[in-house]
Image (cartoon, rainbow, N blue to C red):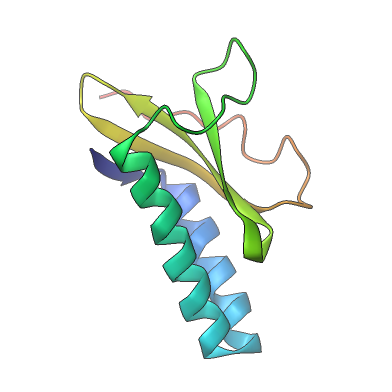
Length: 104
């Protein structure tokens, strides 16, 4: 499956990377590697990760070592995973949940 990022999710990622780079380039590189590993799992099996709620089409993938996660939707018609949010686990649970994929 292809991967697409909501503009605000891309901003989330850039902010996380900048914060980690301030700590250590190695931390930033390792975070990016672990993020890509989880993203690869989602690409191979987009329904592997659990739904946020039973009625939601949003799914959550954890980046455990760094206490972050990303939330995505699956568009089966477009054969695409759409990343909506990337955030730290301690961030408010509702952060970013109002994000919607722009209609074409």
